[in-house]
Length: 314
Image (cartoon, rainbow, N blue to C red):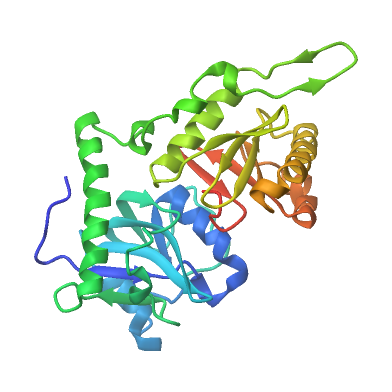
């Protein structure tokens, strides 16, 4: 259980490792998958406001890190967690997207798509700093942010304590409209027949809805004049079609469905953000053409969901 600690410090670290906007999405995926925060500066670097040194040596185990940044005057949030252990320069099995200085493991870790609208999180995000300390004792807005993180991580720790581990139950419950096997279907039109997808697709969309619900986001089924898309997130305007395979033929099928649904629903929903939900990460070459259609990809990787849209869908 997460308890109040008078010696605990709170920090904000940017997901923009090495100050390269082109790699933010890659590092976001790595943070969510591996439950870590990254720093571009080397741990022995005392220059550049000593950011690299502070991240590795001043931040202590049990401190709380918020991975977030200000981008175009809007907060981008990746997650928060309790620092576990000393800094590392590598992880077994982890292949970094680019070179970096050091990392800190976070346990528990809470992935987040956004902060509550009323939370003054923008106040904690500096213009350029890759690392900043929050001061809840003298800044009321910082105190609200720190208390919010304590609650998020405290709830997660309680669930882990009751089960002995963190598992799928940490991300909430199924949304009722998406729980029934018959509610999630797609049609593949062949010369012989039209058949329903197997239960793997229903399970995938159910697990994805749990993942979002843990971040206070909700999925619904979108109906279009007798047709139905697997999921729609009204708050962000996200239109999602799930497939039970990452093979190219399934991706092509999903593209046609998304474009059709987007066209049919344009008057009511406007122009949506479109994505294909897959059970595993597809071959990059099989989806590189999707960017021209403004269609993203969401995939499951172990117990987390990742996307190639800098967290827009995850």
